[in-house]
Length: 405
Ligand SMILES: Cc1cc2nc3c(=O)[nH]c(=O)nc-3n(C[C@H](O)[C@H](O)[C@H](O)COP(=O)(O)OP(=O)(O)OC[C@H]3O[C@@H](n4cnc5c(N)ncnc54)[C@H](O)[C@@H]3O)c2cc1C
Image (cartoon, rainbow, N blue to C red; front, side, top):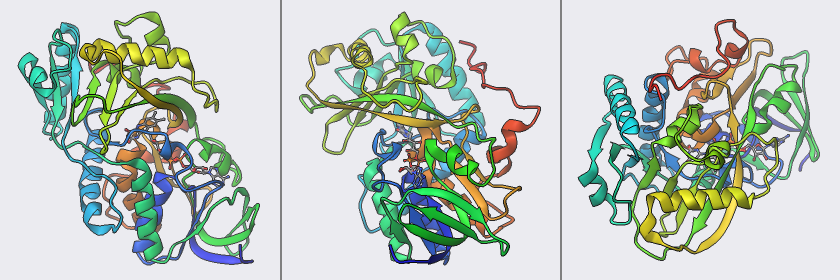
């Protein structure tokens, strides 16, 4: 690296969130440097599915924010030069018992009241969706605006766009310390030299608390929530769009499900995603096991059993590989996209748990508005403030009360 790099905004983290922030901020005319300790998209963003979903978002602010992001992603397909396998076919949740159908009706009603175009599906609809789905499924629900991307390519595409607006990439460059000097600028020490920036955005995913700690911000409760995915080969034309079991919502928000103890313990719920090349991403699990990213074969078997519960006609499928990733979890399942009062010029864009691909575009746009101190922002800023966890009115974990399961 050259000595004494200077920039307006240093974005720490070259994952999907750092990429979206870099794109929108450099597009707004500022001089941006992206600092990534490994390869671009080398963190959680290359270990995900590629869903841009509203179907699994809490009705209200969460789902509205997702809809804004869906609109931005559709615009990005026209703005960015690199294609990222965008497919807007909608997505569905399937129900395996009457209790889930009741909860699904409630979910659809709440989403409709929030202005989202969700609709119920009956048994006939499920049969038409895919002949491979189990005959005993009662129905489900659909969000027609949901879409899918290749998360790697989406990250690269945004970074390519940022570079065209002048952003510089510093990969294999680990931030070791951040100091704010008397002039208000930041000095960022890395294993590769020093970068000076007027503003810093912490987009370091599960590592964001470590980076915030460097400037004295110690109240960022992001924890890694591990997930497993199986990549299966295209042996049969199983389906063209995203299918999840309704229990996925319950696993995500922390409710109790009517499943065997192993499935419950590992937070396994069916997620089926066809890739552009028609391989299938089969998932997933949810566990808190620190930063351990080893594949656990017990969980792989558990996912495979869940796949066969919903797709019994697949029989054996060929597994190409399996991988894990660490979702940056927050206690209320919303990300932190915020300036930091105690350290003017320091911003956080992290904690997107299982929604970082979905929410990257809206996060990047909002961050550029925060940096420019715009009064009107694409979404309200208060629910995403960094200090909401230290306020007295915060409940540690949002219950899955809305659905009463
Ligand atoms: C199994 C699984 C399935 C998922 N499916 C979906 C999905 O379908 N849809 C969806 O919306 N989301 C999904 N997600 C969630 C999504 O992947 C994450 O929310 C998203 O990738 C987080 O992006 P990020 O940029 O915040 O973090 P990351 O991609 O981890 O990027 C952070 C970067 O910061 C870098 N960094 C850390 N410390 C330093 C340092 N000191 N110096 C320099 N660089 C540093 C890291 O190397 C890393 O590259 C899934 C996640 C998992 C695990």
